[in-house]
Length: 354
Image (spheres, rainbow, N blue to C red):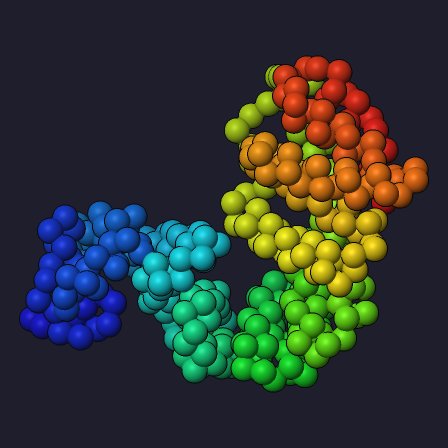
């Protein structure tokens, strides 16, 4: 029986020596798949791909559940690699996610859209814009055929379409898609959500290309304010837990992908403010304070200290600045990170309104 490569579907002559049910056309594709996803799912493929009595005894529902489990694993792996900027490594996981989704849900269904979007994001990072356009066209068609499709999928589709049009220079189309992204994200998560405000950030990037800096300032201010409110709440929760050791756990206040996304946005905003709005010390203090809180929550005291110092210097240029005290207390906590200290209480009870 002819075997086909896991990655490119060409005739294969190499076999995975661990699971013995996966094949490749050459060593390069075998290594790429191993790094991308196969190491994670190698043994999970055996009961699905081995034609044995045990497989025959599996009910149709059990087979579908196993494939759905594989699809979820691949989706999470692809998302993780994309958040780290590893677009090439994300491709195998995204491709396998799509194949499993097709097996479980059938072709041309709306349930395939998340996999299409993952593949589009990976190829966007690799500059394969023609393939991105094809993948998003398939996703858009599936959504159009499903009026009951949820807000979450719609906002993610419009965000990807907006990014594609931005990359190809079709800026008016990009703005339209980002507007739809913001609308559906706000319906799903709320207008003040950090998910929604990412749409404002992407829209601002388009206005930068159009040279409309006043609009950019307004959008960036909204993004910074939203993140400041969110991070302040997370910080207060963490410090309250520090004062109550029984409440401490391994809970992550900001997951890795969210931290990478927030850091990228806030750094870009801080650079913009410092370059185009040098006299806007208020905005500099706000954004730098966001970054200091973000990295404090991410347990990187060196970065938190650096951004905290930038925030403090900016706040001191403005008499009675609302953020001066919270910034100072955060810096004090970084210098004295002992649980249960009065510093924790002071930062939790200090005013943080902006």
